[in-house]
Amino acid sequence: MAGCLSVSAGADESARPHWNNVNVFRENVEEPRAHFIPYRERERALQGAAPGNAFFRSLNGKWKFRYTDTPQLRPTQFHQPDHDVSEWDEIDVPSNWERHGYGYPIYVNVPYPFEIDEPHVPVK
Image 1 (cartoon, rainbow, N blue to C red):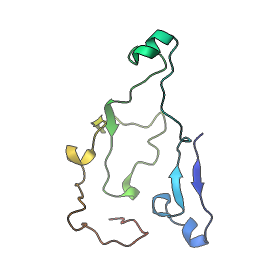
Image 2 (cartoon, helix red, strand yellow; image 1 turned 90 degrees about the horizontal axis):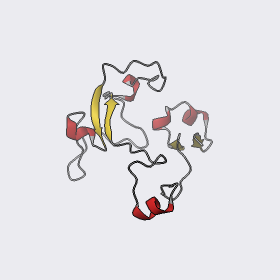
Image 3 (cartoon, rainbow, N blue to C red; image 1 turned 90 degrees about the vertical axis):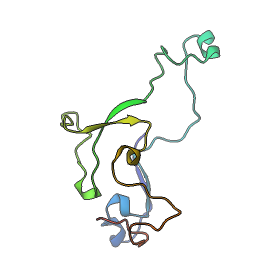
């Protein structure tokens, strides 16, 4: 079940974008559960043979990817079936986009490249 869970706050909090609202701590997530892969046949389950299992789908592979420097520049309708992603790049999944030339890595052993103004997320 997908949805957005937030704790009610003053009008100032509700005017914030969801990624900059400290009262929103999850959005469009399924309820947590134990990891398992169902099988039709007991023998295949005992072998742990996921490939060829109709109940298993790996998400690994090449995915369409669109990087933007700020949240305001993100495509907002990308989830629509008719959204054109033909000009988007592809990236390996699982992966780390900074290792593929998008953005820049931030390491905790060096100063952050932006001013920390909690709970506000930088917009530039």
